[in-house]
Every structure is written in structure tokens, then in C-alpha cells.
Length: 373
Ligand code: IPM
Ligand code: MG
Image 1 (cartoon, helix red, strand yellow):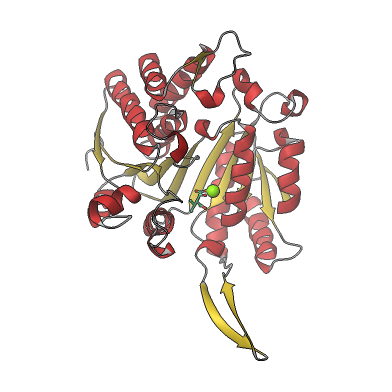
Image 2: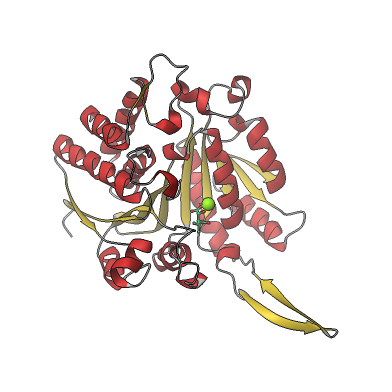
């Protein structure tokens, strides 16, 4: 396959998805001009947009497009208020998002959390707890654990003559599943500050004991990286007390879901945080799925208020991890830094206290970043 045609499926989804995706595409076009690359960007509906267009959260045509692409640039899906009569298995969260993760074997979810110095005021922690700046990476296992373990069901039971319902979720991890995500964490740490904090609940869960054992074994192959183990409850607390102690946090699926939202709060706004979900490497590329950490934010959708930076930084991760275009990825990240440093702010990161700050909309932020490229 020619290395020059870079096929991207752009699935904007619901809520603010379409408007932040528009800005990410704008930025990609700026990258094309600057770096003489051609992207083939094809849009398709997903989520409620998929249900409206084709009766399904993940329409067949959208799935086919994804299969023929090398990366999925994803907006966000799910509108909790919409149509409660649609069964949970068919709702966008499960039928589109979890399905795509499983379908493409996207086992490694990378969520970098970085607090820009000029946005220190958006961090809920007091300045002395921010140290020299917060910069950590949550590596979350994404296709195992309680999200997918079987049995998973709700049933009617009768025990000792008493009738009730019960729900069962099952947490399962195999050693290969733990090994492969541990390798991702250690390799990520090698190009950062060389520390992995592995999160588990080894004092209570069988899964935690195995997790710790396997991560320790994998860690022995990376003598240059310091490994530390931490119980998840303590990890949640440490994030609030001393977040600067963390470099890479390695988590199973659900702990990673929870701790990544907590860590995200440290960066002030979810609107700033990108993420990458990666599968195994095949040939010279790694299939990847790139989405902002925040959700659909229906309350501000369609009002030119959303912060497009998370979506734009997600495209930078796409260029880096799937296409190996590190220079272009850095160009985007630097352009975002420039826009922030010059005082441009969407509402979520704006404060009137900062005399240099200028409040702008979604489209203006995208244009400023594209122009900086
Ligand atoms: C996330 C989200 C999803 C998850 C939901 C929407 C299914 O919270 O990506 O963190 O729990 O994985
Ligand atoms: Mg989550």
C-alpha cells in the first residue's frame, strides 16, 4: 500500500462532536499544506446520528468505512436524555463505542493529562500542589475486565422463597492481556520520565494479585523504568494530594475509566484532553481510534461554545501513533500551545481575572490553531 494515502474515517457523532470535528479537519488541512501530506478523510454517521441516518448506532456502512481506514477520528456519542425506550445494548455507548473497541482490538487506551502553565488557574488544586506542572499519562486496558467479562446479565432469582433481581458483571483478565498492556505502559514511560505506577486492588481481588504479578514480571524487562504498585483507592487519593509523583499510571479497564476522569479534572477542562486507543501493530502502522476525553456536552452543543482542542490534540496523537508523523504531530501541539499562550480561550478555560485572556468560540479557536500551523 502506498504510504502517501492516509485513510481516515471521521465519525463526528453527537452533541458537540460535529462542531469540534469540523475544527480538527480544518487543522488537518493546514497540516496537509504545510507538510505536503494528503489525507483521505471520509465522514460517516455514528451514535444517535447513526440511529437517525440508518437505524443503528454503528451503521454497516460506517463499520465498512472503518475497516477500510487506517485510523478512526472519533467525536463523541451518547445523549442520555434521548429515547429511553431503546434497549441499553443498542444505545450508542455500547453498540458503537464498546463495539468499535472490541471489533478493532483496541486494547491500549492512552490518556495524556497535561496542565498548561498558562491555564494553572483552571486546575482545582492549589498552586503548591501543582508543583512544576502536572503531566501524566493514564494507560488504560480497554478490551478486558468488567466491561466485557462473561457472564454479564440481569436476572430474576428466587432464594429461600424470596424473589428478587440480581445483576452480574464479571471481571476477567488473562496473563497475555495484562502483559501486552504492561508493555505499552513501560514503553510509554521510556520516552517520558521513566516511571510506571501500576494500579490494582491486590488486597481484595484475584484480578489484582495476578495483575501485580504479571506487571512485575514484564517490568523486569525494562530495567530503566521504575515500577511502583499502588492500590486503586490510594491512587485516587494520591492524584489529589500529589499528582506530580505520577508519570505513567497503568490501570485495568474500569479503574482506568475512573482514574482518567479524576486525572482529567486536574487539567481544568475535559475540553483540553485527547486520547488514543490502539490495537496491535500490523506492518508499519498501528490501527488507532482517536477521540477527545470529554463527552457530547449536549447543553452547549451547536452554540460555538465547545473547546475543540481535545479533538485537535487527538488528531496529533493520530499522526504520531498511526502514521508515524511525529513532526506534524508536534506542529499541531505547538500550534495549540501558541493559541493558548496568546490568550485565546473558549469559555471552559476563560477567566476574566486574566487580563491577557480573550474569549472566543469553537470555530475561532480552530482557525487560530490552523493558522499557527
Ligand atoms: C470513556 C467513557 C466510556 C467508558 C463510556 C461512554 C462507555 O466513559 O471512554 O471513558 O466507560 O469507557
Ligand atoms: Mg470514562
